[in-house]
Every structure is written in C-alpha cells, then in structure tokens.
Picture 1 (cartoon, rainbow, N blue to C red):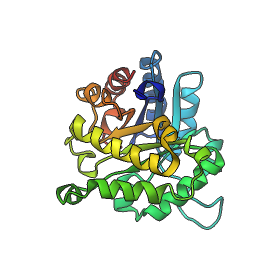
Picture 2: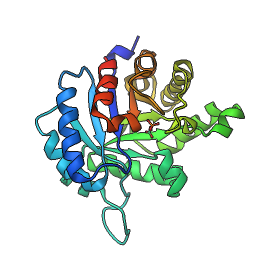
Picture 3: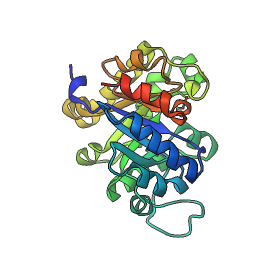
Length: 254
Ligand code: PGA
C-alpha cells in the first residue's frame, strides 16, 4: 500500500465565483473549519481574489492557488497572468488544463504542457487536469485518452519537477453535472494514469505522485471515492464554495 505514503490533498476550484470581499470571508471560514485537517488543503481562486485570499489564509493550513497561468514571463498577452505575478500575490498552486479551459478557451495539450513547464520553473505547484469526454468513455477509449493526455501534458518535464505536479483526473461528463464517477471508475482511471507515469518516470515516482479525482465530488460521496487506493485527494468545484460542505470533504481525507 503506497497510498499512506502519499500526500492527500483536497483542493477547491472556485471557478468564476466570489468577489474579493466574499473571498476574504470564505477563506477565513474555511480555514477555521479545516484547522485540524489531516491532509493538504488548497483553494484555487480567481486572479483578483488571490491577494486577499492569501492574506486571509496566513498562519492557517490553507494554501492558495490560481486557476490558470501563462507560459511567457511577460509581454503582449492581453488577459493573461504570468507565474511571477501569481507568486508575488501569494499563490503557491495553479490549476492547469481544466476541462473548462480546454472546452471554452482553446486550451490544448500543447499549451497545457507549456503552462505547466513555466509554472514549475517559477516555483508554483501544478494541479494538472485531464480526463475523457462522454463520447470517449462511450467509445471505450478512456484509457487511451488519459494516457495520451498524461504523456503530452508532461512532455519534457523532469523527474525533479514532477514532484511538484499533482494530476487531477476529471471525467468531463462528471464536472458540474451532478454525475459522479463511481469509486470503481475513479480508481480504475487513476490507476491507469499512475501506470503511465510509472512508464515515463519509474515506479517510485509514480507511487509518490498525488492523483486526485474531480467531478461532482461532494460531502456525501467523498469518503467512498477517497477510500480508493489510487485516489489521493479531490478537486472540488461547486462544493468548495460552501465552507461547511468543503470541510466535510476535507475531513473525509486522511
Ligand atoms: P464540480 O467541479 O465539483 O463542480 O463538478 C469539479 C471541477 O471542475 O474541478
């Protein structure tokens, strides 16, 4: 059993919710509720919330993350933020390759890879999201899709840098839909991703990697999902907006 040796991490993805004043309150409330957490706790917030969220999280066990980062250090990239900018306002983590970025904002495995490399080079920890869409699951190619994404998204990333990467397996059909993968489905695909990582970096690196499940994880289903050998944590959307619900998920992680 390698699960016990890996870091369990529960991360919230607020998406485009919470103004800075609401963020300040929600971080403070969450931090109070999770102060005895037996796992890592991260809240990934909108760019404009990062500074106040980091301030509110100071001295607590909650870490703050962003939801995207550009791969260039600076320049004419309207609407984007660099890794250095995120670090300076207090982000320690960044979500990269979320399915909503892939679906609505033209994110590809190539740009996910570039963003991941830039984030790691600057010293951010990356929550790298991947997962199949419904048609791919129905066609029976989930394993092929997540294997391909894992290989493309991690291309050129060193074994040393890999230590700062968490992979979030998020079946796109389960995100925000109320449809959750069964614990068996989550376990099966997280294990496939781990075996691909083992093929690329060796078994020890794969055994050490935190792999999360995301997609309608909530206070009711978290315990069962998180009990699976290869599910080391969760990436939580909707339920992370309600501190009480998020805290129940955190307490379900060892
Ligand atoms: P959800 O979102 O929990 O609302 O399904 C998960 C995610 O998008 O990371």
